[in-house]
Length: 154
Image 1 (cartoon, rainbow, N blue to C red):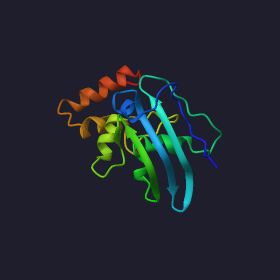
Image 2 (image 1 turned 90 degrees about the horizontal axis):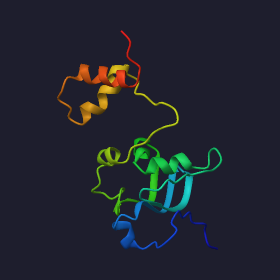
Image 3 (image 1 turned 180 degrees about the horizontal axis):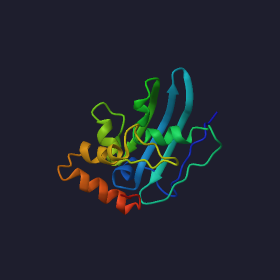
Image 4 (image 1 turned 120 degrees about the horizontal axis):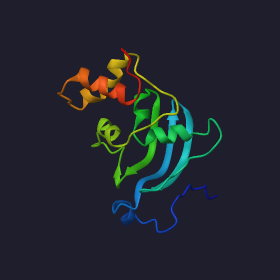
C-alpha cells in the first residue's frame, strides 16, 4: 500500500534543488509523538522558496504540530519526540550539531492567538532584544515599540 504524500511542488524534486534554493523546507517521513501517542504519521512535504503554502485540515489533524517542527518548538515539550527529517535550505534541523535556539532565530512563528510570556508587557518586549545582545537603551526601545504598535499611553 502506498501512503499519501503531500507535495507543493509543480516541477522537479531532486536533492540538488533543495540545496540550490528551490525548496525552503523539505519534510521527509515526519512522525511526531507525545508520549506513546502518535500525533503525526509519516508526512512528507516540500515547501518552495518565496511561495505561499497553506496547510488546511480539520481541527486536531496535526497542522500545528507539523508547523511546530519547522522551528523545533516541540523540543520544549518534555514528552514530544520527532522522527524523520525537516530540512531548511538543505540542512536537517534535527541533526545533532544544529542549535535549536539558532533555528528559532531563523524560522519564526506567528500565532493565531497571542502567546506572551507570563511577565510584564515591558519584559515581553525586551526579551527578544536581550537574548540577541541588544546593548542600547532598553526603555527607549520598549517605548518606541509600543508607540509603533499604537499601544503607548502615559
